[in-house]
Every structure is written in C-alpha cells, then in structure tokens.
Length: 463
Image (cartoon, rainbow, N blue to C red; front, side, top):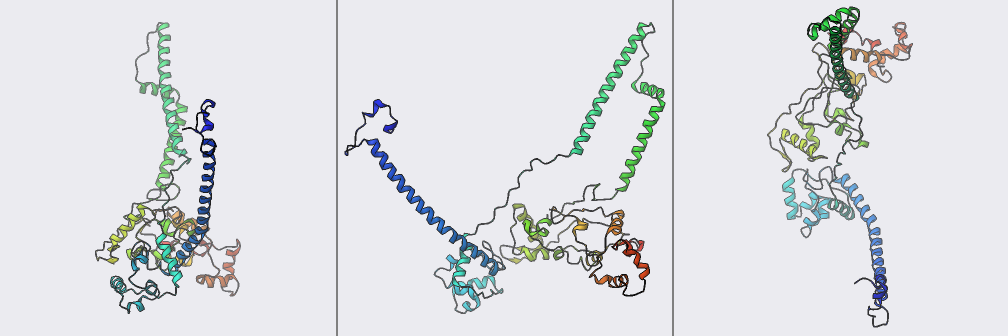
C-alpha cells in the first residue's frame, strides 16, 4: 500500500485511522522516524567503537610486524616452512598442549620438560637450534597477532602502456615508400599518355605511328639524351652505396651501443637484474653487484655466480612477486637439487647453462680488477642501467676499440686517496723532484686522464 501522503486526495478518506485517533500514515511516519533515529544511533555507536578499536589493532599489528622481522624472520616465514616451521596458526596448535611462551623464549630449556609437541617439532627441524629471545608475553602475543592476520602482498598488475610515442623512424620510411610507389605509378601513367599524344601527332602529320619499343629501350634513349643529368644521378647513387657499405663494415660483429641492437640472449633462468640490484626506494632489493660477481674487484673476470650463491637467499625465498617470478625460482631449486617442501637437498643437481653476454676478441686483454679496484668505476658505466631497466642482462656498450680509447681519453683518474697512484701524486705535488718537470704538464687542465698515464699504449690491451 502506498503511503497516505502520496495517494490522490480522493483515496485519503478511505484509509482507516488507528485506535489513538491518529491517521495511520502519520502514525507510521512517527514510528519510522523513531526507528531511523534508533538505527542511526546504533550505527554511530558501532562506528565509534570500530574507530576506537582500529588504531589499537593497527598498532598491535605494526608492533608485531616489527618484532617478527627483528626476531623471527631470519628462520621463520608466516605461511610456509623455512629453517623453522611456519608461525601462522602456531598459537592454536599449542593451545592446551604446552606453554607456548616458554617454548618461544628458550626452546632448548623447554625441551628438557619432555613436552610432546616440543619434542616433535625439535625432531623435525633439528639440528638447527632456535636462539633464545628476550621477549615478553605481550610481545609474543603481538607477533602471533601479526602472523595470524598477515595477508600476502598483492602484485601490481602492469597497466597496458597508453600514449607511448610510436616509432617515428619506421613510420617515416613507410610513408617514403608509399610516396615513391605513387610517384612511380604517376610517372608510368604520364609516360603512356605522352607516347599516345606523340603517336596522335605523328599520325596527324602523316608520318604514321611510332615504332613499338620496350620500356627499357625508351629509358635508354631518354638517358642518352640526358647524359649530364644521369651522370650526376649515377655518381650520387654510387657514393651513397659506398657510404652505406662503409658504415655497415664498421659494425660487423658489434653488439650494443647506439647503432646496433643490444645483444640480449635468452637465458635458462630469467634472472631479473633490476629487481635484485635496483634501488630499495623503488621497491627493489639493492643487492651489491659484487655479492654475486665476487671476483670483479680482484680478478680479470667478474665471474658467474654458482647456483649455491642463489640458494643463500632462495632457500628461504620460494615465491616471487609474480607468478613468473615464482616459476623462475622453481628453476633455481631444480638446478640446485632443493626440495622446498622438505627443506632439504635431494642431491640431484643440474648445472645452469648460462649464455655468455659480453665477449671480447681473443687478442684484447681486459681486467675487471683494474677497472673496479684501481679505476673505481661503477658497474653501470660499462654495463648500462642494469639496476634500472634490465629484466635480463644485455650488452649495453659496443665494446669496440674506439669505445675503449675514447673512454681512456676522456676518463679522469681518481688519484686522491687511491693507493695505486701515491707515487704519481707525490711527484705531481712536488714532494720529490724526480720526474716533476715531465709530469707537470698533465696538471695544466686540472685533471689526469687514463691516456696521460699510458692508457693509449698498445701493450696495455694487446700483448
């Protein structure tokens, strides 16, 4: 039934009145208002209660997260096994079966009580001993509140690129090709029209039609009549072809740089350099390059890390930020012979067949140690923005002789505080008279380049 106030006037008198003598719609309206006020007050009180409880829970969660990362994260994960068992649900598991607080604070001491659950956990995860921790019962409660309410981070879904500039170079070449074809069609059409008009004029003059000739014969006749113009065109085409061949010869066997595509071979494991070596403020792990390439500062070769280096982290980290990352981590476990479910090595190892990215000619000598330890170069100066935009390693620099000697000519040597150049610095500063006259000219521009220290000598790289 519609409310009385919304009924036509003729129908209002037909509605019954309530026992109190008040029209029913008015009675319903007052009751409705009272109900609405009651419901509103109830919702407001619940909202205030929730608002008061939320900061307390959030604070407890944050406190538990901090305590977990500071005391537990090196051996425990929230939802899966690591060095120790997963902590989620542990509080419920221990309920009525022992003193969880005593077990967390000093597991070895609690083992002596003979608790059945404690002995079972120890038998599963020994011989690794849980280090005693100085935590209060309230702090332990905060840790378990955190792990029981923890939710795995949701990976950001990459948005499709919008408004990206198109490849203008490719579009320009396409339009030039279309225009060239159009001009060719127009030229052939005009040539046919011209021949038809010439035939008409010849017939009008009584000379008959022109003899039938092929297009090539007509072109040769035209070119012969315009020998000077065709000579310039032929010279231009010849010079253009020679220059193109010259430029192509310079990049034979060259990978990387601005003139040729970067060499980026497919690898058996898609190791994301940016994620591992990128800056922490951009959500990456900020691992130092030399943690994996440990011989870069003391050997000719930077070295390829063994799978055991990967397992230093991936014994604990078994899931990636994306499904693709988890898939690649599983490959590492397979090559290392690691069973993440059992938390043990199976002994079935398989070497990773990495594809070498940077290759130098056999007659060229290059030492990472010289450039890293002595030259104080950052890895990115030769390998490019590997910590910013390389999901898979690629050859960024061309690694040609021109590129090397240009760097040696422009690169300023970091002399101050560098023990390798103490003697040179002593002579330049006038501490000794030996060689000071010969070396003084190097300070005229206020810097010393690698070339000035012999970086252009052939035997530096070829011997």
